[in-house]
Length: 200
Length: 336
Ligand code: HEM
Image (tube, rainbow over all chains, first blue to last red; front, side, top):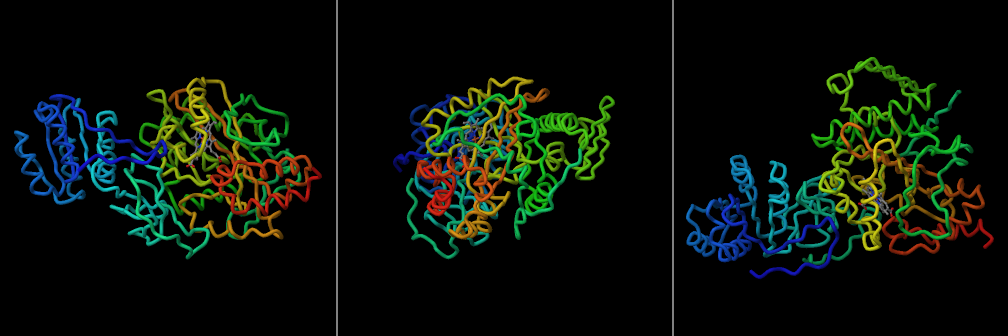
């Protein structure tokens, strides 16, 4: 998957740059199937980057997994979804050495969630790199009920917890790893604008 | 000195009201007939007798009712007060600053006796008497930030300084102009200000941050910010937007004078001694247009400011939908 061009946004929204190798420093790499290409590009740019790397692929397509297996010496961990990746990444972080680098690649939602998890585990922000690949879907937090709705591709959308119709803000919290969703018809209950696809 | 505290509400039947004295001392925020964003920060050395700037933490006729309103908001949503683990010392710093200031400035209302770390605090208006050990959280019913800000008007943010930036790592926020502490906690100065239009490009935030990083102990500074609020509601939070949003559309030419409020935030900046954190109290004053217009100069100026304001700012501040009605009402008071 090619790199995505983002529209200009506000200062709280993370920006994503291509992953850069920190050489053979200990590393935790996590990607979804779109992001796996970014990890493969990274490994192609510097093969030493996998020397001390733990690699987690979330729901990878079989061809991606096969290509990754060829690039690395250690077994690649796979998980069926983000929910199961969380505990695994947490466990890898708990035994991580000083100076560990984290490379994340794929959807904004996945990277947001794992960034929040990693910083909560004490990994400094500047040890985390993120490269966006694939879907423009967002991970949204409802400001009213605080529930998270994953993979939001439309604006407005329905909160999967409280059912309010929310508009999609660009305001982003790294701690929560999500964008903010706010009731779209708060002032005029029932008047809901037409649904649009989210642009990156 | 005897003081009167109003019995009033900031929700439901909205019985909030200002006495003639409260109107007289209202911190009208405009010193020109036009408004745009600027780095409007000035020293806060105190102010004229009776003014809202006179003391470090102004206590006015709304004190007791405002604290009751905060308690209601917190009971519904405890996350309006948050403190990341490294901010507890800053909470104690703030508690000390407020207790010492209030006991000094309002000896008839507050008393603080200190014997080493054994402190004895008396808050007469709220009927509180507390003995506790300074820096020992087990001796207070809440954490230090929550304890003291349940007894002090205004919202409070505590900023941690690192990497040449300020981080919003603790706060008590129950009377905010539509932003969420729970969402913003942990953000830096540029991140939490990200939704504000224009100001970054104007250089306002870069200059303001530079200024704040240079604030030293024993200096205090202040600035005024303002917005427009329908009904005297303190809790205009995004969390409850679906509850207060409909009220925003209830403005008519007949009721605008009583229902539309100018909301002024007196923001002050204090460097805290032990934690080196910055305390940022945001004190909210509300005055309806009808009361403001008892002062002809305020009526004239507010009319021009709101008539000519950049539409992007009117939209961000949330009063664009009522701007026409407001401006027409104010036009009736001025002979420009
Ligand atoms: C360090 C303490 C400060 C904190 C915690 C703080 C917090 C905030 C927050 C949470 C908002 C609302 C943003 C949103 O829409 O979500 C805001 C708005 C704003 N802040 Fe600050 N701020 C601080 C200092 C300053 C300073 C020193 C300036 C100086 C110019 C400033 C200028 C502004 C302006 C112009 C707005 C837009 C307000 C409006 O149009 O109503 N802030 N601030």
